[in-house]
Amino acid sequence: MAPILALGAFAAGAAGCGSYGDPCLRNTDCDSGFVCVEGACIIDLGDNPSDAAFGDAAGASDANRPSTDASDEEGTAPTVDSAGPDATRDAVIDADAADVRASTDSGGGIGDGVSGDVGGDVDSGIVRDAEDTTDGLDATG
Amino acid sequence: MTRWTVSLATLLVMFSLARFAAAQRLVTGGGIGIGGGLQRSDLIQDGLFQRARTRIVAPFDFRNDEDMSQGIGVVAIFEVEPKVGFGVEARYVRWLGKVVSGFVGIPAILAPKTLVGIDVGVDFTFPLGKSGVAIFVEPSLAAMPLGTDIPGDHLLLWGLLAAGIHAQF
Image (cartoon, rainbow over all chains, first blue to last red; front, top):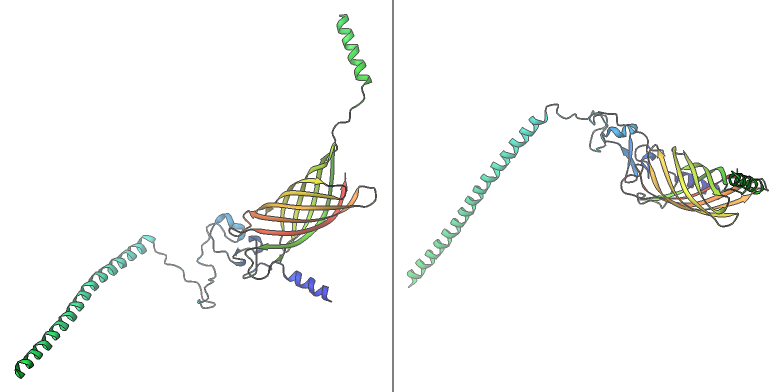
């Protein structure tokens, strides 16, 4: 009985059938559409047409591939990126960056004002206390 | 004229009396067997080894009959389970007697993706009578660092054992 169990364990130790998450040591250990990364088969997200035999049709897009992000709700369609030209998106990004820079500059002015006010309050308070003490001494003298 | 006649006659006599010299002859052997074993890579996080693919091997060896102690070999490799693949191996073989031979080779899996490395091994050949047919048992170790079948910059190690039938042609 022991040899049979040992043989079964030996057979079970073989590389898996090659679907998602199965262990692998070679790229061809994984089924079509999967690729071996760090010892496990994961979905092949590459768009390299030379790998067409492994599930990448020439010119295929990642837009319709199932997402591997665990935070995605199951069964929802993947969000397709904006169909607009890249130039438009770049212009929007540049404008946002300019806004951020402007906000940062004005923030420096606010900081200066706060520190000046605080300094002024502290100074004036000390002077007032000193004057009160002087007045007291004069009164007692 | 007499000079040419004597020369031709002497040449004919020498050719007719000379014994046929034994030229070098190619001694060929071949066989077929089945193999398997264990494989290891630094990709494995749990456990030391996995079972390597089962393969059918068809080894052929070629020797010069004037120097039967060494030769070259070519092995056809058919990976059959759990995934299929095809490859060849070229090896230098050194015979250490009639039973034992050692080899150093360059195995290469060619399809569906490539895998190239180096291996060393020993062949034990047990003759079945005097017919030239024998059973071979072949343990070997291989290191496969190159090829498109290797995911990333890793090294694949094989410890293999093959057995089958070998014949001298």
